[in-house]
Length: 265
Ligand code: ADP
Ligand code: MG
Image (cartoon, rainbow, N blue to C red):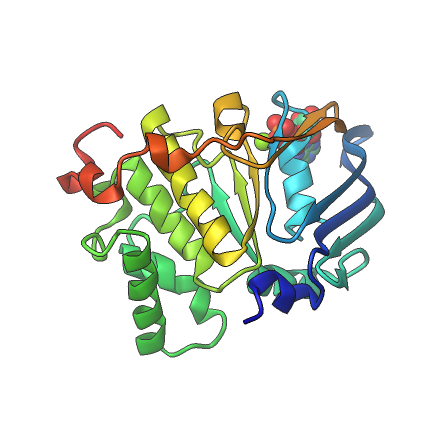
């Protein structure tokens, strides 16, 4: 059986991400803000990487570039076998919708919408019928341990549960790359570790490539590699020989449930 990374790239062990001397310069009137200044980085398919660095060091801007949300001013960017540099806005949106899932610090769920409908939404853009969309959303929520939270609205869920709904929504289109910008930033440390256990499991079981931004060193310890940014540049790139096992410190999800998120996790 071909693993997911083979299916994407056609080659084993090839890069999911290849950034060559990427630059992003924001312009506000006359002022130029070079947010990403010549970043070259290769991420093999199936790797789980963290991007670290102080606030303002260009982490989110870099995520926007590799997530095809924004285009670079200089350099070249390859995602799998496709060159992204120079693609139109529409073409980038297509790549994004088919290949990339996003998870954010503040979950970005629709407030007046149930967990099922939040998760099913990306499939609507793919033209799937309502019944199929809901069936797939139910399956995904069950996979992520949210089988008994399908009809809840975000404000009836704990932070950790909301982030799991957001992860389900990111995965529903079966992306090859998951980009997570401070996904544990709004969670207490125990819940953060639960989310890391889930991401570790997804990475190992499906070969999903994950790039995660964090400024917490204990979160980076759960991933294979830590790349540090400073002033828009990569200042260190370290392989973690001793990846911590998040599930060893996390409780299983079904023990962490509480009705309507009244407990503060
Ligand atoms: P980080 O995610 O590491 O905190 P960012 O990538 O958000 O850093 O920001 C890098 C630099 O670019 C900062 O100086 C920030 O103020 C600036 N910046 C970010 N987004 C914009 C924008 N849309 N317009 C202008 N400047 C921006
Ligand atoms: Mg940021």
